Amino acid sequence: MELETERLILRDFTADDWPVVLAYQSHPDYLRYNGWTHRTPEAVQAFVEMFIQCQQKDPRYQFQLAVVLKETQQLIGNCGVRKESLDSHQADIGYEFAPEHWGKGYATEAARAVVEFGFSTLRVHRIWTSLVADNTGSAHVLEKLGMQLEGRLRDAEYFKDRYWDTLIYGILASEWNRSS
Image (cartoon, rainbow, N blue to C red; front, side, top):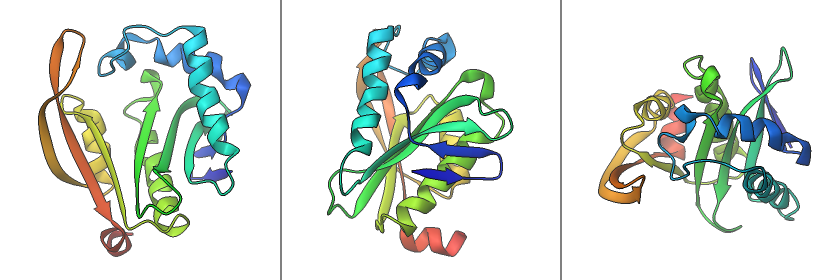
């Protein structure tokens, strides 16, 4: 599976991708809004293997793709769209990028491609996501995609010795079709 944008290639993960994922998932800025306090090689290998296992499903309905810069072939993060089941009418999206690649529009570019794939190929009615409310950079990406804030869950997650509010964003196929 592969999607292409102006600057990026979104492709299936391979087992050899884990060292790059470990490097960016170990960065303190990445860990800030995540329940993990550190990452181990074994945990990241299992994380990548989970995505590889999803590739084997037939029919496939979960797509978490490695994001690679076209120009250099450097893996810089991942982005995906996932239905809960084959017959689900909605899907969630998720993405993460190496902190040194934040603020360059890559997350928006990759997320736009997977949202389009979700609506056009997976034929879902709604795409949504949740995130820690303090992660304003990620919320900005979602808003640039035309996703709407649907709700705030107060103290919904507990990690790093505190409670965190989470935000729910969503977009309907009809809204996407009007904006694209």
